[in-house]
Structures are given as structure tokens and as C-alpha cells.
Length: 154
Image 1 (spheres, helix red, strand yellow):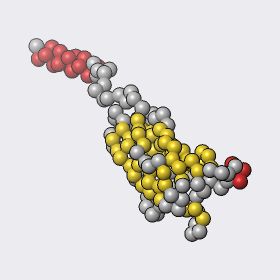
Image 2 (image 1 turned 180 degrees about the horizontal axis):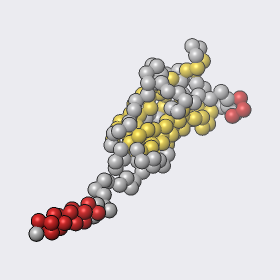
Image 3 (image 1 turned 180 degrees about the vertical axis):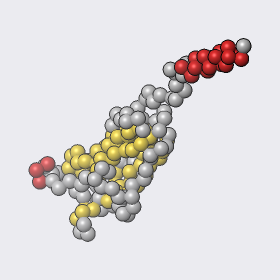
């Protein structure tokens, strides 16, 4: 009787372990991140331009890329234009030399940092239209649709 009792316990335990459950309670990241830009529409040549945006994701944000590129110079052709640009993948600091803010691990974030419109001591960005683009990536690798804003250096 004891042998039968132990055999049934072993069989019952083995049966329970084999039912390890195929389901998972871990949440699944189904949405890509979203963002919005609140930066100003104009800045004076030589002044710092403040990049400001908010980011959110249903699970967890990982990183962002900010790009500023020439759109249309006032009174100049593209061939003669030395444009002001910024790319957070290569320009890793703000206008004050500080490391760019991180959004890693957050569900929502507000980011703001200054970007210089100067090239060295005596050269400032030319007047014209520029495009600010923000692209977000979440922890699962999903990338947002780019969010853009046109602004003018005057």
C-alpha cells in the first residue's frame, strides 16, 4: 500500500511538472512609440535653439534621434549655402557641452536641450527654414513614425 501511495505521488508530481503551462503572463509590446514636438517656430541666428519634445510608449522607451536639417535658405541657393545641422547620433552633447538627456527605461518622457546655431566663435547659421525631426525607439525595437516641425532661423 505504501508503495502504491508513493508511486501515485510520483506520477501525480510528474504530471503536474509536465503541464508547465504554455501561456505567459508577460505583457506584449504591440504599439510603436509616439511623440510630439513643442519647440519654437523661430530662433535668431547665433542664439541657441531649444529642442523640446515629449515621448511615450505602451511599455518602455529606449532611445531617440533628433535631426535638424536645412530646408530652404532665404535668398540663397543650395549650392552656395553652408547649412546648420544637428544629429543626436553624432552630436552627443547639447550647446552647453552636457550629455543629451536619456529616455531609456521610461514609459513617458519630456526632453529639452539647447542646440547651438553657431559654427565656432564668429560664424552663425544662415537665415532660412529648417526641419526638426524626432524618431523614437522602444525597448522591443519598434520605431515611431518621424515627428517633424519646421522652424526658421532669422
